[in-house]
Length: 256
Length: 256
Image: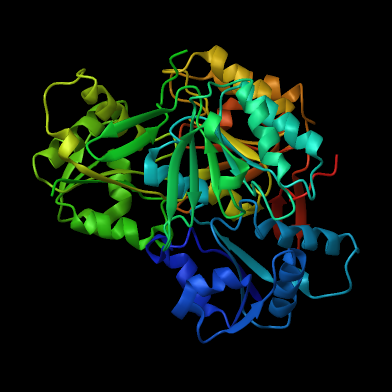
């Protein structure tokens, strides 16, 4: 059998990696990933043939995974968080779609069995760390305009800002993309109080975890890097202090 | 130490339950849950003091959990999927908030250490089963208008329908709530093609799993029950047939 596992490795803490992901890695001879994610997996992938491909080589990673699996090597294509959320899984199916349309070179990709293993995404790790920010309607938006026109992204931010969703921004900035998060903030400020809670989560569940709760007015591009999750509360999201702990939650109900 | 674990048990398959959740259950003497979720946990909770509370008794479950933990019993408050997503976690913090405001009877709730353990939600299990439906911007909306005015929910559906998000509906129907999903469909039909892929997922990752891919035009309230996840594709979401498998994915890029 030709097998490709498309594996979520979660936010980073091994205690949040479910058995299904461990088993898929154990069954695989070859692991395809961006280097940082591999280092987080440590012993789980130590004896495997590892294929590191750099950031930006996402399509190449998906293609190599399909090629390896089609050549009979049981392969795991790995990404952090949930591999299905703004991550590698969709690229595998984009390539399969292209192949079915005759847009890719001849291959045995269609013979590969594929299993996608879901995982815990950064927005969930952030929510759990601080309480329950995702307790009511929420959305996730990638701020990367590499493949999506900014006009589409802007329209989406407008829509969910005015309809009062909790919003998680993925890919908020990169070395080259700096203005998009500021533009998003401008839109949000037109619809929400400057006191709206905002969570910045970096290295969630990992060593050097940094989680902070600020206000929308305080949100600055300088405090955010490409690995930061930015989560914006709705009008209902509340911060509470209980003893030494600060919690943030979005109530189930909506008291407009 | 007074300890409350707020535990996600995921979609149902034990292979998707991470070690952190198992450890929290193992450390607890008391488990508070709705009966169905307890039965899925089997041996993990067999030797525990179990507190079953019926559907509709969500606030009572959260209150009992805080009371048990405050009384020194290490307690796990459990719900399926991600406990932070339309589930029990937020109720715990609502009660703590009320207590801090003096709206609850005197208690030792503020001395309880709380740890929320995130998990895999139904929208992720459905996405993984069928490919990668959450590959680009998405949202989750509860169709329950018990605590949220329908006008708020309707505005949210309008917003994300026009801005082309992939949409997961939680609590799509109940025995008493039948018309909301039909109203949502009417809004969606004004913005999306009748051919838009729709996923219905029931008992995801469990025995008797039923997953089907239909079109928006085919969506009928009769085919949905309170445990069904309803996921609506965006204008970009595509179905492909590869050998005997049907896959559904939403590309990373947006080709408007």
